[in-house]
Length: 146
Image (cartoon, rainbow, N blue to C red; front, side):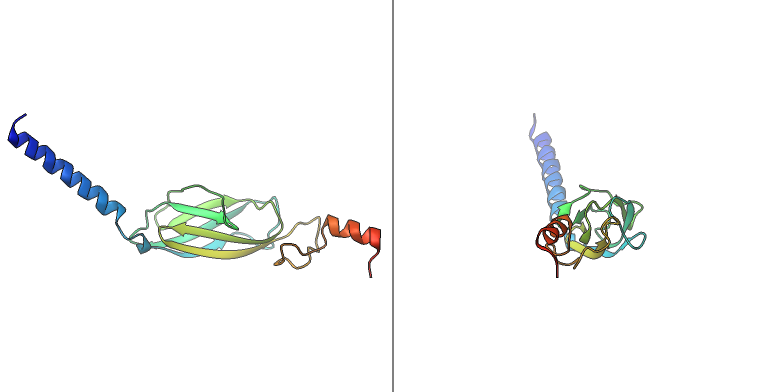
């Protein structure tokens, strides 16, 4: 291999390395999750709802992640169409659900209250231990209620 070929190869490798570094070093905060909406109203368990996020910024094509109360519900998703992210969501538990959409360094969260039609009196839905679920009803049956 001659000197000229080595210089060309080294130059190409250096350029490729610089390109990769610039992609990974790009400011991810330039992606913005502007708003989240949830279809329907009076959300109930075991019913599917559409989650939609409106996106903007220079990082609009970065992968999008969805979570429910901090638990991943989507894995990485490519935003499509450009400027939007969509996910079908079926809540399995009643109570307060914090739905979060993240893209790059930007996140947006929306609170969704979910009910169980078979237990229309969940107590304080913001208290994870509150309510009079089946255990509470069983104890009040044993000890009486006031």
